[in-house]
Image 1 (cartoon, rainbow, N blue to C red):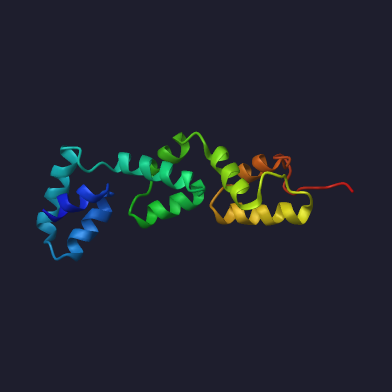
Image 2 (image 1 turned 60 degrees about the vertical axis):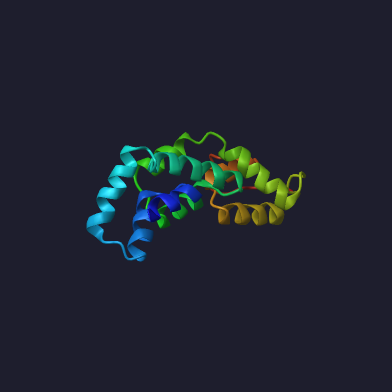
Length: 148
């Protein structure tokens, strides 16, 4: 009953739901078959949870590195997570939205502004290749060189 109550409120990862049930005092021998039954009925689906998690957090301006770390904390790792992160098509779009929300529509005017944006976007969990693409750095170079 507690498992259905939790799933009625929101979707859960299998490991997250298992952990919650065990914390409430349910026996391991009861929890494992229950989770299997919920998976069989498609009430508990790690792929669906991961896809929704990726889309939701990307829309909030978080990049794939941060989303991967958050999923790891939820007990999800490996091929499933990588497939969902790789299948998400709009990382650059969401990166640009996060950049514009924080810094406005204007491009960074100097090197210090670019570095400030790079640090911010890195903190948000975007890869260096995504940041370089969005900010217009030459992606073949390790460092940006400006001529004055």
